[in-house]
Length: 409
Image (cartoon, one colour):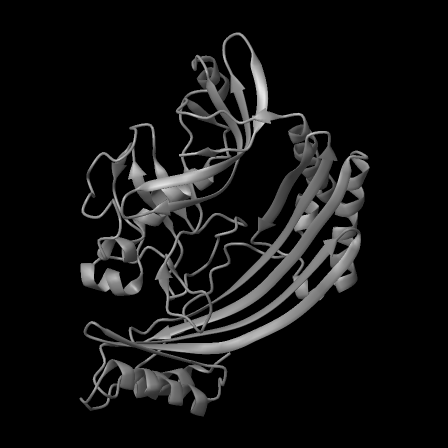
């Protein structure tokens, strides 16, 4: 997107007033979305967003400016604005030498979405609609959505970093409404990966639609979810949102440094069961959070956050790494070129234990089996969190009865 000699001059402009650090982040993002409701394609949108954000740091002050003008004049104007915000005075000249780093391909793409006809993308939604409605005459509404993006990013800074990455993501989702004697119930499924249109060689969208319909139909006969404090067993592979909320956000160093996390100052403490080892890993090929570099130019990596119940580390961004004198973790992320980076998760998960899932259920006298979790939230300062249980089963030794809804706190 931008030549190295131009970047060197822009960075020199940014630190001319005595700044400690300057950075150019540029991105070029193409995206497509489509939506279907009640058997009709409601919208098909395509867009492109291209621009750069320039960050200048002096002491504890950060100046930031962004521009959609990627000419040298436009970039230098943004650099001067960011520098003015970070510094009042100083002077001198600082030369920046950039060496292009290798591009890391974490998730190879075989079918770039922007090479696929819009008609083929719309057909995916139509197949979902047909499959969901065929599940039962009780299905009264089907909504489906498709989205893809192809984003090229460039990061260059006064530490000599000059790297690029390309991130391609494709997503499909379906919501099904069933109507019965007890009213209306909803089923939802989705699939999204860091890959191109080959997603639909991996994911059978008809199966996805039928599963969403199955959930809605089963809920028509479901009893209300139980209330009160009960033992909970979460289906293998379905509890990610729980750890995302309970641990993930609280381990982001920007919140930790502000004292807004219950985990602040607790490295080395036992914060979970010794059975828990929590990982954040941006190198997991084709998973949604897979990246070659983060939005500050640092290579993605596997970070052990909690090991055998002990808090071992946080997730970091550049500014806090410099203050702590430690290596980056690859967790700097931006909403777009118009925003400063923040510390955020990539792919966060718990390692397998040694027990078989069926043995865990057999060892639990009675309780709630959660087959699927929905969204959640957390107060990182207190550690209080919640996650919505979309599909639960209440059981005792004597009998089982299926129910849905409710929340786990």
